[in-house]
Every structure is written in structure tokens, then in C-alpha cells.
Length: 322
Image (cartoon, rainbow, N blue to C red; front, side, top):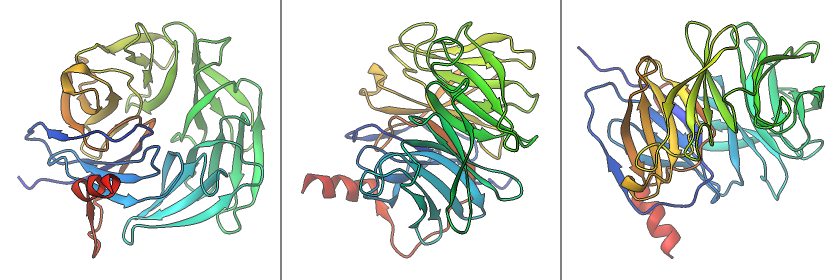
């Protein structure tokens, strides 16, 4: 059977690791785009662990959304010149174009796109969700304050509402919040309970959510399932030897669920990409090290086109040694 190839996209805020380790698999290939404090956006392919630099000299590229085939929106809290922004990353040309920057932005962390093409941006420090004009970049607040205390990530749901993961909502433990983009009304989904520091969520086909939490039920974190009725249960628990500080989570086009964690002692203390069985909770290491690190957002995208120039992980290490 011919193998299909898909991409996952994520952004990382960790420092550079010193090596890349790949663990073989007979599954189809998936990949990640990752960024870090050095302001890089990187593609990571799960089958080969090849890491490619797609964009550099950014700030804190944290939020991601696929606007159209080949175009990824990037929310950056500190670019350009310390301003927050949302930009378009062209996957064919590997070029960045700023759509909206500065203005009312304080700390843009998340970005989402509606089926009609409307763009929404989550601002963490401002505790706001903005609607962004896709042509002019004009910023219009649609939901402010309320349940939003320390929002970490945002995504568009199939029913057209926004889902925000907030680490301090519900009186401190954090949880999930729905926002109607037309009215701005915020509706609780699930909070407190098992949550301690939730970061990101993935919507399962059955309507439940898988949520990564940095510190529940221990300092290593876990993946928590939130059922449609709001009930919570732990799917996978972190440990010193494997999954630590789980952050970004996503499902690729082949149905595989991936989680990015970091600092696992058995893998050199660097970033770690794992495959998660959502039924059994089993975790399988896919890649370790290289440019993997803190990645609060993952996104499935089609195969990356091959540009005329590709910067590899080895070239990046050489660059940073100079």
C-alpha cells in the first residue's frame, strides 16, 4: 500500500538541543513546524526526524492556523521589534508576510480561521479575542475579560465557535471555554477537577477533548480527556523518564495523535515528540532533540512543497556556533 504523507505544525519556545534521535516506525510520515526563543519555525518529519528551518529571526511564534492550502497563520507575541503580530507563512516560498502588528495587541498567543475565512487572534495579556480583517489587518475586539484569565491557546471548532484553553480560569485550576465569535459570549465547557495548568486541546472525532496539562496530576503533567458532558479522566500521565511538560497536541490526516513534551531524562533533557494511543494511553517516542522543545500548538497541514533552498538542522547548529 502506498504511504501517505502529512504534516503537523507546531511552535516551540525552548533552547536548542544538541542532537536529533529518530525512532523507527512503519506508520505513514507526519511532520511538525516548530519555533523557539531564537525565533525559528521548523519542519520536523516524524518518519525520518528530518528538521528543516522554514523561517528565522522571529520573536515568540506560538499560535498556528491553516488559512488556506500552503498558507499558515502565525501568531507571534514579540515580532517584529517586540510588537505582537499575526503573519502569513507561505509554505512554498518559506516567506513571512505580516498581516497585522502592534495596535491593540499585547501578547498574541493563538490564531484561528473560520470556514468563511475570518481570522481570530487570542491575546493572552490583554485577555481578549480579536477579529482580524484578512486584507487590512484591522483589529476588532469581540470578547474581552470575563472568564479569560490566562489564556494559552485557541482553535476553531467545527460548529463555528472558538475553544480557548485557559490555565487560570474557573478560579485558578484552569479549563476550557467556548466563545461565540458573533456575540462574544463565553460559555464554560469544563474547569477545575483534574486541571492544574492546561495548555492545549484537541477535538476527538466523538466530540470529546484531549487536553495537555503541564502539572496534573504531578509535576510531570498529563493528557486529560474531557467528555461531552464535561467529565474528566486521565489518558496518559507524565514521568521523569518519558513524557514531561506535555504541550502541543494534534491529530494528523492519518488519524495519529501526537504530543510534544520536553526534558525527559532518558532522552537527554531535550524536546520530545510522542505518538499517543488515545484509547490505551500508550506513548511511543517518535523524535527527540534537534529543534524540538516547548510547543503549545500543533497543526496538521498537507505535504510541504520542496523549495530551491533548504536549511537543515546541521546548518542551523553551524550557524549558531559562529
